[in-house]
Length: 239
Image 1: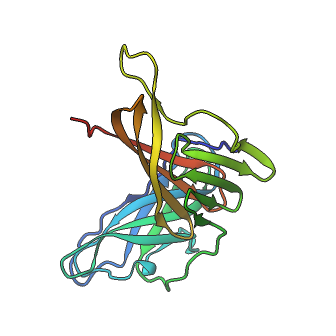
Image 2: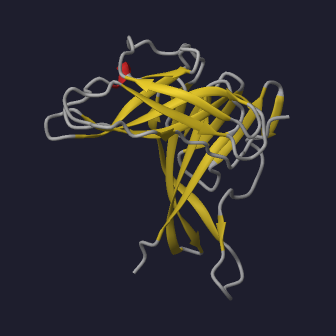
């Protein structure tokens, strides 16, 4: 059974072209290595892509091809631009099959037609929560209170229920005894495309009105998958 939470990340390794000035190289070899000995089906991969000044302005033209020339489901967004407005860094999301401990050869080019993969990934933002649907997993992320994830279900199976008590995030100060509770103070959809949706939540650890430090949690959801990639940042903002 696919786990609900899986701390795992795969990235793309680019082969640098011989030059990045006009006339620009429009196709770059790349590869993905599966290091864990686990076969993967339609596995999500997220990676940054650099571009020279003036090389690309429309991220929808980025496409990823397998060695046989067939395109993979992919989406790209702009992360940073050059002074002339062209793309400096793009963030690429794709999904691909990978055999255990294999190396997948790819070609990344900027000759795409702007087509977007059709998926069931979506979200609904409410006053008190954000509901995320991946097509197989439904998750409710709190926008306030002690629970970061209020409920999670896959099909008819409930992994978490709204009635479950307790806090999702706890912190202890050495020698302090009782834990500080990680209270959610806000949440919003930070990034979204057809393959990946990121909810950014933030809050602080508190106990009896005393604040220890802040935190930021990014929950990444993937189209057609029932696992969630969680990135937690501790913010030492207390003086």
